[in-house]
Length: 87
Image (cartoon, rainbow, N blue to C red; front, side, top):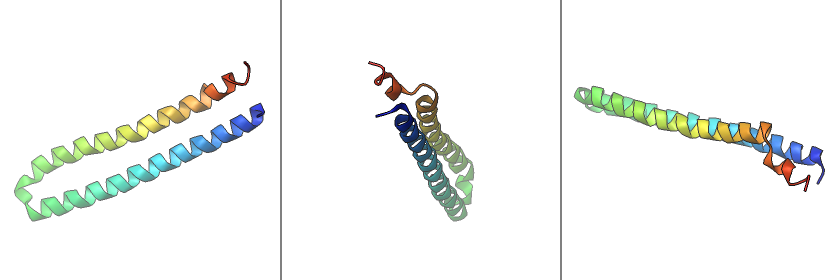
């Protein structure tokens, strides 16, 4: 493979990582928000506890997306696949 082909495939992979990370986070936040509203409507006295748990889960959802972005940026700026070409 040429360098241009490896770079093109890397760009496609990075786009897929960004897109799936954004879509997964959006779906997760939609489900989380809906369940939070449903739970607080059913038992309003548990609102403070539910709010804390919601923010913990929201942080975990964001962490998964940020890990994907980290991998994508690694592949963009320090492409390990180009090193195999030079050997």
